[in-house]
Length: 235
Length: 250
Ligand SMILES: Nc1ncnc2c1ncn2[C@@H]1O[C@H](COP(=O)(O)OP(=O)(O)OP(=O)(O)O)[C@@H](O)[C@H]1O
Ligand SMILES: [Mg+2]
Image (cartoon, rainbow over the protein chains, first blue to last red):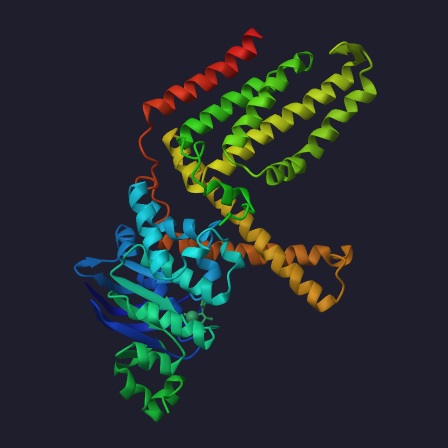
Protein backbone atom coordinates (compact mmCIF):
# COMPACT_ATOMS: atom_id res chain seq x y z
CA UNK A 1 0.00 0.00 0.00
CA UNK A 2 1.20 3.49 -0.78
CA UNK A 3 -0.80 6.67 -0.23
CA UNK A 4 0.34 9.68 -2.21
CA UNK A 5 -1.00 13.22 -1.90
CA UNK A 6 0.13 15.85 -4.30
CA UNK A 7 -0.87 19.49 -4.32
CA UNK A 8 -3.79 18.85 -1.96
CA UNK A 9 -5.73 22.08 -1.48
CA UNK A 10 -8.88 22.53 0.55
CA UNK A 11 -10.98 25.57 1.37
CA UNK A 12 -14.28 25.82 3.21
CA UNK A 13 -16.80 27.98 1.33
CA UNK A 14 -16.09 31.68 1.70
CA UNK A 15 -12.84 31.15 3.61
CA UNK A 16 -9.16 31.19 2.68
CA UNK A 17 -7.73 27.71 2.04
CA UNK A 18 -7.13 25.59 5.13
CA UNK A 19 -4.76 23.28 3.24
CA UNK A 20 -2.67 24.80 0.51
CA UNK A 21 -0.68 22.40 -1.63
CA UNK A 22 0.12 19.46 0.64
CA UNK A 23 2.54 16.82 -0.71
CA UNK A 24 2.89 13.66 1.32
CA UNK A 25 3.55 9.94 0.98
CA UNK A 26 2.75 7.16 3.40
CA UNK A 27 3.85 3.56 2.86
CA UNK A 28 2.74 0.25 4.34
CA UNK A 29 3.48 -0.21 8.00
CA UNK A 30 4.61 3.37 8.60
CA UNK A 31 3.36 5.23 11.65
CA UNK A 32 3.22 8.96 11.04
CA UNK A 33 2.31 11.75 13.47
CA UNK A 34 0.45 14.68 11.95
CA UNK A 35 0.94 17.74 14.11
CA UNK A 36 0.04 21.41 14.01
CA UNK A 37 -1.68 24.13 16.01
CA UNK A 38 -5.44 24.14 16.66
CA UNK A 39 -7.19 24.94 13.42
CA UNK A 40 -4.20 24.07 11.26
CA UNK A 41 -6.34 21.66 9.25
CA UNK A 42 -5.37 18.22 10.58
CA UNK A 43 -8.92 16.92 10.87
CA UNK A 44 -9.80 18.47 7.52
CA UNK A 45 -6.85 16.68 5.92
CA UNK A 46 -7.96 13.31 7.28
CA UNK A 47 -11.54 13.83 6.13
CA UNK A 48 -10.44 14.74 2.63
CA UNK A 49 -8.41 11.53 2.36
CA UNK A 50 -11.60 9.48 2.41
CA UNK A 51 -13.52 11.83 0.16
CA UNK A 52 -15.73 13.32 2.87
CA UNK A 53 -14.41 16.83 2.18
CA UNK A 54 -13.87 17.58 -1.50
CA UNK A 55 -10.29 18.78 -1.99
CA UNK A 56 -8.42 19.65 -5.17
CA UNK A 57 -5.10 18.07 -6.09
CA UNK A 58 -4.62 14.32 -6.33
CA UNK A 59 -4.86 11.60 -3.75
CA UNK A 60 -3.71 8.15 -4.83
CA UNK A 61 -3.90 4.82 -3.10
CA UNK A 62 -1.38 2.72 -5.02
CA UNK A 63 -2.50 3.45 -8.58
CA UNK A 64 -6.11 4.45 -7.85
CA UNK A 65 -6.90 8.16 -7.74
CA UNK A 66 -9.62 9.34 -5.35
CA UNK A 67 -12.83 10.36 -7.11
CA UNK A 68 -16.55 10.04 -6.48
CA UNK A 69 -16.46 6.60 -8.07
CA UNK A 70 -13.51 5.30 -6.07
CA UNK A 71 -14.47 6.81 -2.71
CA UNK A 72 -15.94 3.50 -1.52
CA UNK A 73 -12.69 1.75 -2.40
CA UNK A 74 -10.76 4.33 -0.37
CA UNK A 75 -13.08 3.93 2.61
CA UNK A 76 -12.58 0.18 2.56
CA UNK A 77 -8.81 0.58 2.68
CA UNK A 78 -8.51 3.65 4.89
CA UNK A 79 -10.22 3.63 8.28
CA UNK A 80 -10.83 6.72 10.36
CA UNK A 81 -11.17 6.93 14.13
CA UNK A 82 -12.88 10.20 15.04
CA UNK A 83 -11.68 12.59 17.69
CA UNK A 84 -14.95 12.35 19.57
CA UNK A 85 -15.97 8.72 20.09
CA UNK A 86 -19.58 9.78 20.60
CA UNK A 87 -19.68 10.52 16.89
CA UNK A 88 -18.30 7.14 16.03
CA UNK A 89 -20.41 4.92 18.25
CA UNK A 90 -24.02 5.08 17.19
CA UNK A 91 -25.44 1.61 17.60
CA UNK A 92 -27.48 0.28 20.50
CA UNK A 93 -24.60 -1.91 21.65
CA UNK A 94 -20.83 -2.06 21.29
CA UNK A 95 -21.07 -5.40 19.55
CA UNK A 96 -23.38 -4.07 16.87
CA UNK A 97 -21.28 -1.00 16.40
CA UNK A 98 -18.17 -3.04 15.77
CA UNK A 99 -20.13 -5.25 13.39
CA UNK A 100 -21.54 -2.29 11.42
CA UNK A 101 -18.62 -1.89 9.02
CA UNK A 102 -18.40 -5.62 8.34
CA UNK A 103 -22.11 -5.78 7.61
CA UNK A 104 -21.57 -3.13 4.97
CA UNK A 105 -18.89 -5.35 3.47
CA UNK A 106 -21.49 -8.13 3.01
CA UNK A 107 -19.50 -10.73 4.88
CA UNK A 108 -21.36 -13.87 5.93
CA UNK A 109 -22.87 -13.64 9.39
CA UNK A 110 -20.64 -16.33 10.89
CA UNK A 111 -17.51 -14.51 9.82
CA UNK A 112 -18.83 -11.22 11.21
CA UNK A 113 -19.55 -12.88 14.55
CA UNK A 114 -16.11 -14.46 14.57
CA UNK A 115 -14.18 -11.32 13.73
CA UNK A 116 -16.08 -9.08 16.12
CA UNK A 117 -15.83 -11.51 19.04
CA UNK A 118 -12.12 -12.13 18.48
CA UNK A 119 -11.25 -8.45 18.28
CA UNK A 120 -13.35 -7.48 21.30
CA UNK A 121 -11.56 -10.19 23.21
CA UNK A 122 -8.11 -9.04 22.07
CA UNK A 123 -8.83 -5.45 23.06
CA UNK A 124 -10.24 -6.49 26.43
CA UNK A 125 -13.72 -5.26 25.59
CA UNK A 126 -15.51 -8.60 25.62
CA UNK A 127 -17.32 -7.84 28.87
CA UNK A 128 -18.72 -4.61 27.42
CA UNK A 129 -20.11 -6.04 24.22
CA UNK A 130 -23.79 -5.72 25.14
CA UNK A 131 -23.52 -2.30 26.78
CA UNK A 132 -24.78 0.86 25.11
CA UNK A 133 -21.90 3.13 24.07
CA UNK A 134 -23.45 6.03 25.97
CA UNK A 135 -22.79 4.39 29.33
CA UNK A 136 -19.09 3.68 28.82
CA UNK A 137 -16.23 5.71 30.27
CA UNK A 138 -14.26 8.01 27.99
CA UNK A 139 -11.33 5.60 27.80
CA UNK A 140 -13.54 2.61 27.04
CA UNK A 141 -15.29 4.58 24.33
CA UNK A 142 -11.96 5.43 22.68
CA UNK A 143 -10.91 1.79 22.55
CA UNK A 144 -14.34 0.78 21.29
CA UNK A 145 -14.16 3.43 18.56
CA UNK A 146 -10.77 2.03 17.57
CA UNK A 147 -12.28 -1.45 17.45
CA UNK A 148 -15.00 -0.36 15.02
CA UNK A 149 -12.28 0.55 12.53
CA UNK A 150 -9.71 -2.16 13.30
CA UNK A 151 -12.24 -4.90 12.69
CA UNK A 152 -12.46 -3.86 9.04
CA UNK A 153 -8.71 -4.49 8.63
CA UNK A 154 -7.97 -1.36 6.58
CA UNK A 155 -4.46 -0.81 5.15
CA UNK A 156 -4.17 2.61 6.72
CA UNK A 157 -5.75 3.71 9.98
CA UNK A 158 -6.17 7.40 10.66
CA UNK A 159 -6.62 8.43 14.28
CA UNK A 160 -7.75 11.92 15.16
CA UNK A 161 -6.30 12.87 18.55
CA UNK A 162 -6.58 9.43 20.06
CA UNK A 163 -5.20 10.47 23.46
CA UNK A 164 -7.40 13.51 24.06
CA UNK A 165 -9.19 13.35 27.45
CA UNK A 166 -7.49 10.10 28.45
CA UNK A 167 -5.82 9.59 31.82
CA UNK A 168 -2.44 7.94 32.08
CA UNK A 169 -3.71 4.40 32.45
CA UNK A 170 -6.21 4.68 29.59
CA UNK A 171 -3.47 6.20 27.44
CA UNK A 172 -1.16 3.29 28.22
CA UNK A 173 -3.89 0.86 27.30
CA UNK A 174 -4.54 2.64 24.03
CA UNK A 175 -0.83 2.82 23.25
CA UNK A 176 -0.50 -0.91 23.81
CA UNK A 177 -3.44 -1.57 21.52
CA UNK A 178 -1.93 0.70 18.86
CA UNK A 179 1.52 -0.87 19.13
CA UNK A 180 0.10 -4.26 18.14
CA UNK A 181 -1.37 -2.89 14.93
CA UNK A 182 0.70 -3.90 11.89
CA UNK A 183 -1.01 -1.51 9.47
CA UNK A 184 0.14 1.97 8.54
CA UNK A 185 -1.17 4.71 10.83
CA UNK A 186 -1.59 8.45 10.49
CA UNK A 187 -2.13 9.94 13.93
CA UNK A 188 -2.98 13.57 14.67
CA UNK A 189 -1.96 14.65 18.14
CA UNK A 190 -0.94 17.58 20.30
CA UNK A 191 0.99 15.31 22.65
CA UNK A 192 4.69 15.51 21.73
CA UNK A 193 5.81 12.68 24.00
CA UNK A 194 3.09 10.39 22.73
CA UNK A 195 4.09 11.23 19.16
CA UNK A 196 7.75 10.53 19.89
CA UNK A 197 6.93 7.19 21.54
CA UNK A 198 4.53 5.97 18.86
CA UNK A 199 5.68 7.46 15.59
CA UNK A 200 9.09 7.35 14.04
CA UNK A 201 8.09 9.99 11.51
CA UNK A 202 6.24 13.28 11.99
CA UNK A 203 4.68 15.80 9.63
CA UNK A 204 4.21 19.36 10.89
CA UNK A 205 1.58 21.61 9.34
CA UNK A 206 1.78 25.38 9.28
CA UNK A 207 -0.32 27.86 7.27
CA UNK A 208 -1.83 25.09 5.19
CA UNK A 209 1.52 23.68 4.10
CA UNK A 210 3.85 20.94 5.25
CA UNK A 211 6.39 22.84 7.34
CA UNK A 212 8.53 19.82 8.11
CA UNK A 213 8.55 16.09 7.44
CA UNK A 214 11.10 13.89 9.15
CA UNK A 215 12.13 11.97 12.23
CA UNK A 216 9.80 12.83 15.10
CA UNK A 217 12.49 13.28 17.77
CA UNK A 218 14.58 15.56 15.59
CA UNK A 219 11.67 17.76 14.55
CA UNK A 220 10.18 18.08 18.01
CA UNK A 221 13.50 19.06 19.57
CA UNK A 222 13.84 21.93 17.10
CA UNK A 223 12.66 24.86 19.25
CA UNK A 224 12.35 27.35 16.39
CA UNK A 225 10.34 24.93 14.25
CA UNK A 226 7.93 23.87 16.99
CA UNK A 227 7.44 27.48 18.02
CA UNK A 228 6.61 28.44 14.44
CA UNK A 229 4.15 25.57 14.01
CA UNK A 230 2.55 26.07 17.40
CA UNK A 231 3.21 22.57 18.70
CA UNK A 232 4.75 21.42 21.99
CA UNK A 233 8.48 20.71 21.84
CA UNK A 234 10.12 17.70 23.43
CA UNK A 235 12.08 18.66 26.55
CA UNK B 1 -23.46 -16.32 36.36
CA UNK B 2 -26.97 -15.02 35.74
CA UNK B 3 -27.19 -12.56 32.87
CA UNK B 4 -28.65 -9.16 33.86
CA UNK B 5 -32.04 -8.48 32.24
CA UNK B 6 -31.68 -6.46 29.02
CA UNK B 7 -32.32 -2.78 29.61
CA UNK B 8 -33.77 -2.07 26.19
CA UNK B 9 -35.46 -3.85 23.31
CA UNK B 10 -32.30 -3.32 21.27
CA UNK B 11 -30.42 -5.36 23.82
CA UNK B 12 -33.11 -8.02 23.81
CA UNK B 13 -32.58 -8.21 20.07
CA UNK B 14 -28.94 -9.16 20.57
CA UNK B 15 -29.83 -12.44 22.26
CA UNK B 16 -29.90 -15.58 20.22
CA UNK B 17 -33.26 -17.29 20.75
CA UNK B 18 -35.46 -19.32 18.41
CA UNK B 19 -37.52 -16.30 17.34
CA UNK B 20 -34.36 -14.23 16.88
CA UNK B 21 -33.07 -16.71 14.36
CA UNK B 22 -36.11 -16.52 12.07
CA UNK B 23 -35.37 -14.66 8.85
CA UNK B 24 -36.19 -10.93 9.30
CA UNK B 25 -38.17 -10.71 6.06
CA UNK B 26 -40.35 -13.66 7.05
CA UNK B 27 -40.83 -12.16 10.50
CA UNK B 28 -41.91 -8.88 8.93
CA UNK B 29 -44.47 -10.68 6.75
CA UNK B 30 -45.81 -12.67 9.68
CA UNK B 31 -46.14 -9.49 11.69
CA UNK B 32 -48.09 -7.80 8.90
CA UNK B 33 -50.43 -10.79 8.55
CA UNK B 34 -51.03 -10.88 12.30
CA UNK B 35 -51.75 -7.16 12.43
CA UNK B 36 -54.13 -7.24 9.45
CA UNK B 37 -56.10 -10.05 11.08
CA UNK B 38 -56.31 -8.17 14.37
CA UNK B 39 -57.15 -4.78 12.90
CA UNK B 40 -59.89 -6.20 10.69
CA UNK B 41 -61.84 -7.57 13.66
CA UNK B 42 -65.02 -5.51 14.06
CA UNK B 43 -66.01 -4.51 17.63
CA UNK B 44 -68.68 -7.23 17.65
CA UNK B 45 -65.95 -9.81 16.97
CA UNK B 46 -64.04 -8.88 20.11
CA UNK B 47 -64.36 -12.49 21.31
CA UNK B 48 -61.81 -13.46 18.64
CA UNK B 49 -59.11 -11.27 20.14
CA UNK B 50 -58.23 -13.25 23.30
CA UNK B 51 -56.91 -16.09 21.14
CA UNK B 52 -54.55 -13.67 19.37
CA UNK B 53 -53.55 -12.32 22.76
CA UNK B 54 -52.65 -15.79 24.01
CA UNK B 55 -50.68 -16.46 20.82
CA UNK B 56 -48.79 -13.18 21.28
CA UNK B 57 -47.96 -13.92 24.91
CA UNK B 58 -46.68 -17.39 24.02
CA UNK B 59 -44.46 -15.95 21.28
CA UNK B 60 -43.23 -13.24 23.62
CA UNK B 61 -42.31 -15.87 26.19
CA UNK B 62 -40.45 -18.00 23.67
CA UNK B 63 -38.67 -14.84 22.48
CA UNK B 64 -37.56 -14.18 26.09
CA UNK B 65 -38.66 -10.55 25.98
CA UNK B 66 -38.45 -9.32 29.55
CA UNK B 67 -42.09 -8.81 30.70
CA UNK B 68 -41.32 -5.64 32.62
CA UNK B 69 -39.77 -4.03 29.58
CA UNK B 70 -42.58 -5.26 27.33
CA UNK B 71 -45.42 -3.90 29.47
CA UNK B 72 -43.66 -0.60 30.15
CA UNK B 73 -43.26 0.03 26.43
CA UNK B 74 -46.83 -1.12 25.80
CA UNK B 75 -48.09 1.29 28.46
CA UNK B 76 -46.60 4.18 26.46
CA UNK B 77 -48.91 3.44 23.53
CA UNK B 78 -52.14 2.73 25.37
CA UNK B 79 -53.07 6.30 26.40
CA UNK B 80 -53.44 7.18 22.71
CA UNK B 81 -55.86 4.31 22.21
CA UNK B 82 -57.62 5.23 25.43
CA UNK B 83 -58.36 8.77 24.32
CA UNK B 84 -59.34 7.68 20.83
CA UNK B 85 -61.78 5.09 22.09
CA UNK B 86 -63.24 6.72 25.17
CA UNK B 87 -65.42 9.19 23.22
CA UNK B 88 -67.60 6.39 21.86
CA UNK B 89 -68.71 5.62 25.42
CA UNK B 90 -70.29 9.08 25.67
CA UNK B 91 -72.10 9.09 22.36
CA UNK B 92 -73.04 5.54 21.39
CA UNK B 93 -75.51 4.15 23.95
CA UNK B 94 -76.97 1.52 21.65
CA UNK B 95 -77.09 -1.75 23.64
CA UNK B 96 -74.73 -4.60 22.86
CA UNK B 97 -73.80 -7.82 24.61
CA UNK B 98 -70.42 -9.09 25.68
CA UNK B 99 -70.19 -12.59 27.19
CA UNK B 100 -73.79 -12.39 28.36
CA UNK B 101 -73.44 -8.92 29.89
CA UNK B 102 -75.34 -6.01 28.42
CA UNK B 103 -73.18 -2.98 27.75
CA UNK B 104 -73.37 -0.13 25.25
CA UNK B 105 -71.92 -0.33 21.75
CA UNK B 106 -69.62 2.59 22.63
CA UNK B 107 -68.13 0.62 25.48
CA UNK B 108 -67.72 -2.43 23.29
CA UNK B 109 -65.89 -0.44 20.64
CA UNK B 110 -63.73 1.18 23.35
CA UNK B 111 -62.64 -2.22 24.66
CA UNK B 112 -62.02 -3.46 21.15
CA UNK B 113 -59.82 -0.46 20.27
CA UNK B 114 -57.77 -0.90 23.44
CA UNK B 115 -57.28 -4.59 22.87
CA UNK B 116 -56.45 -4.26 19.18
CA UNK B 117 -53.94 -1.50 19.87
CA UNK B 118 -52.29 -3.57 22.58
CA UNK B 119 -52.06 -6.54 20.21
CA UNK B 120 -50.60 -4.55 17.32
CA UNK B 121 -48.10 -2.63 19.45
CA UNK B 122 -47.17 -5.82 21.32
CA UNK B 123 -46.48 -7.55 18.02
CA UNK B 124 -44.20 -4.70 16.89
CA UNK B 125 -42.40 -4.78 20.26
CA UNK B 126 -41.71 -8.48 19.88
CA UNK B 127 -40.40 -7.88 16.37
CA UNK B 128 -38.14 -5.09 17.64
CA UNK B 129 -37.01 -7.21 20.57
CA UNK B 130 -35.97 -10.12 18.39
CA UNK B 131 -34.46 -8.41 15.35
CA UNK B 132 -31.35 -6.27 15.20
CA UNK B 133 -31.73 -2.98 13.37
CA UNK B 134 -29.34 -4.02 10.63
CA UNK B 135 -31.32 -7.23 10.18
CA UNK B 136 -34.61 -5.30 10.00
CA UNK B 137 -33.10 -3.23 7.22
CA UNK B 138 -31.80 -6.35 5.49
CA UNK B 139 -35.28 -7.89 5.74
CA UNK B 140 -36.82 -4.81 4.18
CA UNK B 141 -34.32 -4.99 1.33
CA UNK B 142 -35.07 -8.65 0.81
CA UNK B 143 -38.71 -7.65 0.32
CA UNK B 144 -37.55 -5.16 -2.33
CA UNK B 145 -38.50 -2.09 -0.36
CA UNK B 146 -36.56 0.79 -2.01
CA UNK B 147 -33.14 1.60 -0.51
CA UNK B 148 -34.17 5.23 0.11
CA UNK B 149 -36.95 4.15 2.45
CA UNK B 150 -34.70 1.64 4.19
CA UNK B 151 -32.05 4.36 4.70
CA UNK B 152 -34.58 6.79 6.12
CA UNK B 153 -35.79 4.10 8.49
CA UNK B 154 -32.25 3.27 9.66
CA UNK B 155 -31.21 6.90 10.10
CA UNK B 156 -34.40 7.77 11.99
CA UNK B 157 -33.78 4.86 14.30
CA UNK B 158 -30.26 6.02 15.07
CA UNK B 159 -31.36 9.64 15.29
CA UNK B 160 -33.80 8.70 18.04
CA UNK B 161 -31.01 7.43 20.27
CA UNK B 162 -28.90 10.51 19.50
CA UNK B 163 -31.84 12.70 20.46
CA UNK B 164 -32.37 10.92 23.78
CA UNK B 165 -28.62 11.01 24.49
CA UNK B 166 -28.48 14.74 23.91
CA UNK B 167 -31.65 15.31 25.91
CA UNK B 168 -30.10 13.41 28.81
CA UNK B 169 -26.90 15.49 28.62
CA UNK B 170 -28.71 18.82 28.41
CA UNK B 171 -31.03 17.86 31.26
CA UNK B 172 -28.09 16.91 33.47
CA UNK B 173 -26.20 20.11 32.62
CA UNK B 174 -29.30 22.17 33.36
CA UNK B 175 -30.00 20.48 36.68
CA UNK B 176 -26.40 20.91 37.79
CA UNK B 177 -26.45 24.63 37.26
CA UNK B 178 -30.02 25.09 38.41
CA UNK B 179 -29.60 23.21 41.65
CA UNK B 180 -33.13 21.83 41.70
CA UNK B 181 -33.98 18.24 41.02
CA UNK B 182 -37.58 18.90 40.09
CA UNK B 183 -37.29 18.64 36.35
CA UNK B 184 -37.16 21.52 33.93
CA UNK B 185 -39.48 24.48 34.42
CA UNK B 186 -41.77 25.46 31.60
CA UNK B 187 -40.09 28.86 31.27
CA UNK B 188 -36.81 27.33 30.03
CA UNK B 189 -38.29 24.35 28.29
CA UNK B 190 -38.52 25.97 24.86
CA UNK B 191 -34.94 27.18 24.66
CA UNK B 192 -33.60 23.91 26.03
CA UNK B 193 -35.61 21.97 23.50
CA UNK B 194 -34.20 24.15 20.72
CA UNK B 195 -30.69 23.57 22.03
CA UNK B 196 -31.21 19.82 22.10
CA UNK B 197 -32.45 19.83 18.51
CA UNK B 198 -29.54 21.90 17.21
CA UNK B 199 -26.98 19.78 19.05
CA UNK B 200 -28.52 16.54 17.97
CA UNK B 201 -28.67 17.65 14.34
CA UNK B 202 -24.96 18.47 14.58
CA UNK B 203 -24.20 15.09 16.03
CA UNK B 204 -26.45 13.31 13.56
CA UNK B 205 -24.40 14.90 10.79
CA UNK B 206 -21.15 13.69 12.38
CA UNK B 207 -22.61 10.25 12.82
CA UNK B 208 -23.69 10.14 9.21
CA UNK B 209 -20.10 10.96 8.25
CA UNK B 210 -18.85 8.18 10.52
CA UNK B 211 -21.28 5.77 8.88
CA UNK B 212 -20.10 6.75 5.41
CA UNK B 213 -16.50 6.21 6.49
CA UNK B 214 -17.40 2.64 7.29
CA UNK B 215 -18.93 1.89 3.91
CA UNK B 216 -22.55 3.02 4.36
CA UNK B 217 -24.87 2.82 2.43
CA UNK B 218 -24.01 -0.34 0.65
CA UNK B 219 -27.23 -1.78 -0.68
CA UNK B 220 -25.51 -4.39 -2.77
CA UNK B 221 -23.03 -5.31 -0.07
CA UNK B 222 -25.23 -4.80 2.92
CA UNK B 223 -25.71 -7.22 5.77
CA UNK B 224 -27.52 -10.14 4.33
CA UNK B 225 -29.10 -12.67 6.61
CA UNK B 226 -28.32 -16.24 5.73
CA UNK B 227 -30.50 -18.07 3.21
CA UNK B 228 -34.07 -18.79 4.28
CA UNK B 229 -34.33 -22.42 5.42
CA UNK B 230 -37.30 -24.49 4.19
CA UNK B 231 -38.36 -25.20 7.78
CA UNK B 232 -38.55 -21.46 8.43
CA UNK B 233 -40.78 -20.99 5.38
CA UNK B 234 -43.10 -23.78 6.44
CA UNK B 235 -43.30 -22.44 10.00
CA UNK B 236 -44.02 -18.92 8.80
CA UNK B 237 -46.64 -20.13 6.35
CA UNK B 238 -48.31 -22.22 9.04
CA UNK B 239 -48.39 -19.28 11.45
CA UNK B 240 -49.77 -16.89 8.84
CA UNK B 241 -52.35 -19.43 7.64
CA UNK B 242 -53.60 -20.12 11.16
CA UNK B 243 -53.93 -16.39 11.87
CA UNK B 244 -55.97 -15.88 8.71
CA UNK B 245 -58.04 -19.07 8.92
CA UNK B 246 -58.98 -18.37 12.52
CA UNK B 247 -59.96 -14.84 11.56
CA UNK B 248 -62.09 -15.98 8.60
CA UNK B 249 -63.64 -19.16 9.96
CA UNK B 250 -64.15 -18.48 13.67
N1 LIG C 1 -17.40 22.71 8.56
C1 LIG C 1 -16.59 23.76 8.56
N2 LIG C 1 -16.97 24.92 7.98
C2 LIG C 1 -16.16 25.98 7.96
N3 LIG C 1 -14.93 26.01 8.50
C3 LIG C 1 -14.48 24.90 9.09
C4 LIG C 1 -15.29 23.72 9.16
N4 LIG C 1 -14.59 22.77 9.81
C5 LIG C 1 -13.41 23.33 10.13
N5 LIG C 1 -13.34 24.61 9.70
C6 LIG C 1 -12.19 25.53 9.85
O1 LIG C 1 -11.09 24.95 9.22
C7 LIG C 1 -9.90 25.14 9.97
C8 LIG C 1 -9.22 23.80 10.21
O2 LIG C 1 -10.02 23.00 11.03
P1 LIG C 1 -9.61 21.55 11.49
O3 LIG C 1 -10.70 21.03 12.31
O4 LIG C 1 -9.20 20.77 10.31
O5 LIG C 1 -8.33 21.87 12.39
P2 LIG C 1 -7.49 20.91 13.32
O6 LIG C 1 -6.07 21.05 12.92
O7 LIG C 1 -8.07 19.56 13.32
O8 LIG C 1 -7.70 21.60 14.74
P3 LIG C 1 -7.72 20.94 16.19
O9 LIG C 1 -6.31 20.70 16.57
O10 LIG C 1 -8.33 22.00 17.04
O11 LIG C 1 -8.55 19.72 16.11
C9 LIG C 1 -10.33 25.85 11.25
O12 LIG C 1 -10.00 27.20 11.11
C10 LIG C 1 -11.82 25.66 11.31
O13 LIG C 1 -12.44 26.79 11.87
MG1 LIG D 1 -9.04 18.34 14.75
